[in-house]
Length: 394
Image 1 (cartoon, one colour):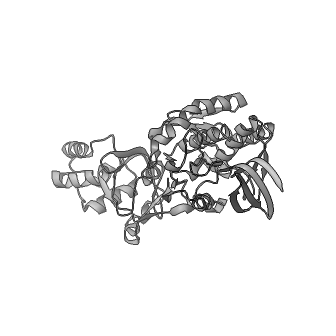
Image 2 (spheres, rainbow, N blue to C red):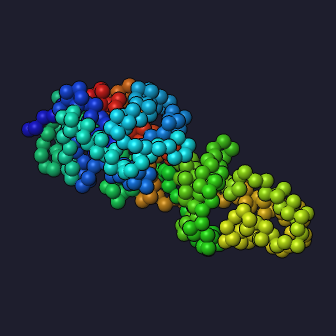
Image 3 (tube, rainbow, N blue to C red):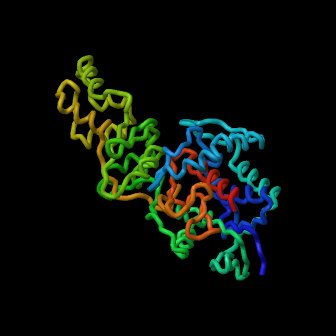
C-alpha cells in the first residue's frame, strides 16, 4: 500500500498552493483531481487573463457566518505576498478597476507558475483520478484512488464548490465533511446572473444585450454595488448584478439606478423649461439607449411632449430610471455561478492551520469552506491564503 505524507484532493488554486508550501517543507505530497486538466477555474477567469487578486483584500469583502475567520489567513499570506510572487515570476499584470489585478497576457501564466513551483517543491499531480473512499484508522487516512489503496498522514480537501459543473465541479468536499461529522452552512449559487418570470421577460425582450456602464444596484438599506449591468434574455447580469446576487434571496426586491450620477427629475424639468415641445423619449435618448428609453416609458406609463407632462409624471419617469424596484424570481444557478456560498462551517476549523478541530490531520481550504468573496479577485486570494496556511501546517 502506497504511503504519502500528504494527499491533497483538488488540483485548483488552493490545492496547488497547499502542495507547493508543504513540498517546500520536505513533505511527500500527492495532488489528485478527477478533471482532465488542473486549474480550469484559473484558466477561464477574467476572460482568460485571471483576476488573480485584489489590492484591497480584507475580511470585509467576504460573506460567511463568521467573516472574521479570514483575518488570520489573509494576514499571514496577503495579496501583497502573492503579488510579489507574480512579479518574481516575471508575469506582467495591470489593475483594471476597483483594485482588480489581471495578467497582461494569459491566465495560463499563473497556472504554469503554480505547476512549476509544485514540481520544484517535489509535489506530484495525478489527474483523472477518482477518490472513492476515505476513512481514518489508527491515526492515518486510508484512501481508495482509482481502485488503488493508499495511506496518508494528512489529507487536504481543496475540491471547490458546486459552481460551473461543466468543468467537473461536484459536492465531493461537502460529502467528506459530512462523513467526518462536520457541520455545513447551506450552500447556494453566488456571483450569478438573476432571472425573471416570463411576463417580466416579455416586457424586457427588446433589451437583451443592452448594457448600462455604471449602474448602482441595492439590496436592502446598506448593501449596494456600482458597476456595469447587462440585460440578458433571462434577466440581468454584469458585475453589479453578480455582486448583489450573493446577498439576494428568493422573494427579495432589488433597486437599480441606471443614471446614478444624474438628478433625472431636475434634468427633465430643465429640459421642459428650455424646450417644452420636445418629446420625452427624445430627451431621454441623450442619456440612455433608445430601446431602454422605450422600456422606461412603458413601465412608467408616460408619453408625450415635455410641456404636457407635470412634475408627478416626470417623477414617475425619474424613479423608473434611478429607483427601479424589481423582484427577481431566481438565478441562473450553479451552471453559471462563479462561486458557491456556504460550505464547511468555520466553527469546525482552526484558522491558524485550516485543520478540522474534530478530525486531526484533515484540512479544508478554498471555496469548499464557508468563506465567499466579492467579485474582483477576492476568492482567488482566499484560495492562496487558505492554501498557504494549510501547506505550512500539514
